Image (cartoon, rainbow, N blue to C red; front, side, top):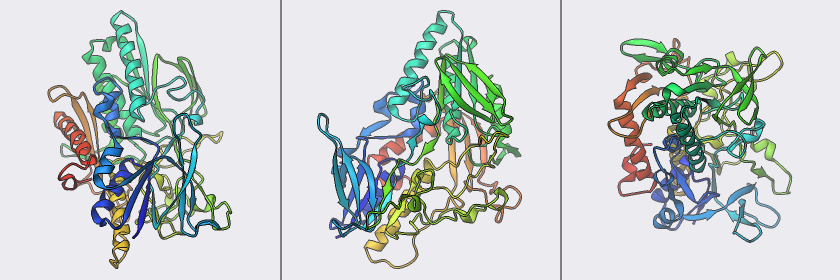
Length: 484
């Protein structure tokens, strides 16, 4: 019997565990460890954040799904990795921290034959003073955060209906944030809903981002084929903003946030203040803080994990000038180079370098978008890692399965509204995610599959994906027929 332990029940971890349970017979055990009791389909938090959906529409409890599937579920937080075992426990194991209301936390080891680190990110609100839903801004990074954002938004709508003017600042709350696509989707949703409520004339909407140009999205931007023309994503995105009268501020690092006011600096080291009635600013991501120890108890965290806290895998982490980075640097199998039975999936793996060109102000402040690894790539990586482990357990020979982000495409649908009749969407596809100037010397990507469109059809697709992926995540009949 083999035991596979999956740390995390987000997109990557949940996908990996689901396929492992399908591909392995009952003699093998699949264990999922997550501090969260519910699965959250994160892309639809945007709709929760403007009051169009409820928490129950974007989440479901994990325990019943895992019980039905034959997956052991531990609601707990992973705190330590012991990939060589220890003097007390011969096999590799992970230490988890379980909390029971009214009792002290309990530490418990779980031995494993294979481990998948799919812990996702730590939402590093502390990186910026005053950032976060417990401080002066709102967030849509979780369902409960999005509920808080909706409450704030709808309260301001009522004030505007009484004749007040309000300013909304949406974007990134630090110079090294990722997930600009989520901020972009939220700002167009918020603007759309202001019009639906009849108060758009009372609102100023500002998009504040660390991107060098609009449409960078942490991918260095792209050239897209649209209506027979080749258009840079900065023009595509700027046109969406202009049509909606959204003012954009780029190349910005938010330094400090107070009640109703934030301070940001630019790449030129200019400092500005911006007042707001509501600010939805995304935090930077970091690793969750897992520690690692060798058999003798020595701390090996710095060798297994990058300085960011994300796990090192089969990537080229050699420090290089930006011009020397290439698509081949990116990981393929997501296997730890030190421990062949340990893998990382989704946001938990350490990128070898940013995709966007790094920019640093004269005073040394880094301001650029960091690499995205969410959604479709995370799910695909989770499935591929699960396939590699299942093959090893069942005795199948051959190389590990691969899913380099330099060979994966992605789709992003920034949809406004949540009904079939009212809504629109800016839809983009990109292939590959990491540009490859060896295969595609002119643009870095294949323009047959790198496209952009605006219209109702993309909105319908986003609605369809919401219901399809929640159905798939609940492991309903036929779930494997729905692609990642």
